[in-house]
Image 1 (tube, rainbow, N blue to C red):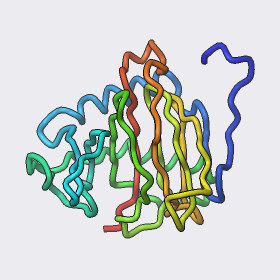
Image 2 (image 1 turned 135 degrees about the vertical axis):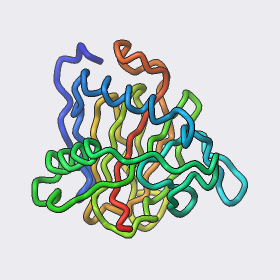
Image 3 (image 1 turned 90 degrees about the horizontal axis):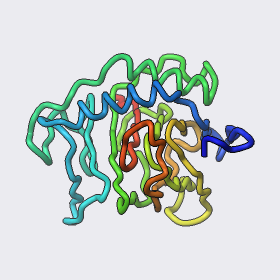
Image 4 (image 1 turned 45 degrees about the vertical axis):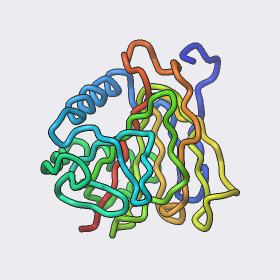
Length: 216
């Protein structure tokens, strides 16, 4: 993929939803991966998320700032080891504001104060069903950063989990931001392509770092 003839172009997938390929440089991907590995360590580390219906999510997760569990937030890992959630670092908030500025413009980033990160790890068999990020009290844009293996990211509409939707290929280093009219759009990951991440990164699988403003 690194020897493609033409660079991939940024695209507006829906109103307020923008895909920016290769937004994170190789060194910045490495720095973010190193941070994710530290965050994944216990206590309050990487866990399997269980739904109220008794099922489990195939992507494993760790949270920063506020702990998300279906379908609420807490200050401790209430569905895990009950440890206090890891703090949300200020540099990650700055990264989120810069991402919104680059994707949606400086006005969209004005006054934003990101305080939540959900970090999902996908192995070769992991998926994420269509869902909305609707447990926050703020309507700030959601920032999504990809590391490792390429995935199919399905971005839908605000009314239903079914069509119409658009499938976007997200590779390591890609940025996807959605806000405004698309803030509550359904989205998911129906497929991960194993072994497609950059070898230099040294990551088997896919990490998705999602930044949100809680409004709490």
